[in-house]
Length: 407
Image (cartoon, rainbow, N blue to C red; front, side, top):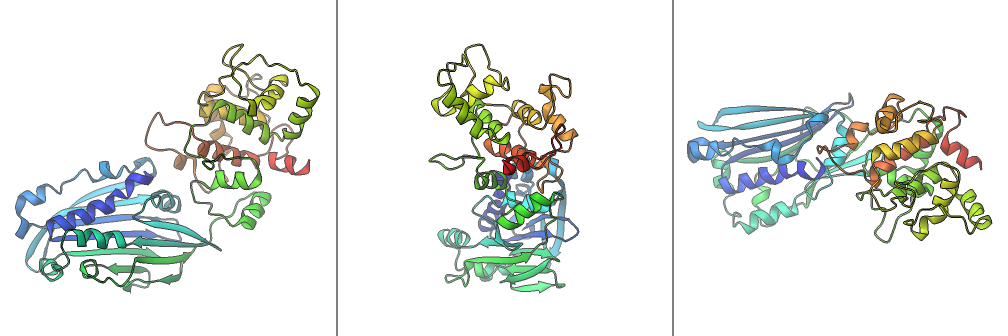
């Protein structure tokens, strides 16, 4: 959904440019009651362009945007109306997100809309306009503003919110809550007056129910809605290590990396070092373990906490599945698949059944794309791991994070 969704903006603007007589309105909403979404309204002047141009607009809009309808309610309504005695025909697309804050954060992973955390509970919504100006100029459309308006054309963005607005550069405000940028003339200007339209709002985001977790998140003041939050906070706490290429959250988690994270969740780093120094010749029997993971795999093997894919292979570079990693996490939380607490192949469902992710701002559903066979990434591993740190161990009633900090 993230990267494909905002193709919608490009589609709308492109259609406006090439038809020359479009009524285009793109609006967003985010309310204190938890509702929010986006609305795309686009119609062509059929009186001028004729039936053929209109029929081409009956588009596969949502197929193009790639919106995952599992996390949104989507409606498509045909349009037919008159403006200044000219007939306009088109479509209106309305999307209501199940979790607007998370949806806005994800859909802003593009160059066409920005949704960024400014700190102190303030978010900034921004519409970069420079590329739009360049596209219009490159098409030689700088002198058609008057004609465009005369044919009923317009280009309008808006953002409706009842949150506290800190700052904005909207052209006008409707009903005290709807901030509007009318780009109908500005988009054709050779010297546009602004590089972006923006709105800054302060949101009081629901705090974690876990006091320890809440104190930590407040002290770090990170964007809890961002899809990279879990990886970044784990890195700041020393659980997740990156490479020369950064945290690589988009990449597949390997089985060796999963074992390393498992040992860190259990707080075994010092024990690993001691075991390695006291047992320098220990052999797990696995011949495919990289040097950087050898000490950890040896110790986990010694404790009978991991299994290989054969007697001689651990499968270090093989991708780890969500079920495999969740199995390790559940074991770290005191659940035993050997004793029948869960079945490893159904570990992902077990995690949901025990509400492992219930205290996270990002619902588990928003960790999934629309693909059925998507890979298990370091980002998803981070989501599972961070939530596990603040989940009570069923045997000791301790938190993994609490146990680690007490050592």
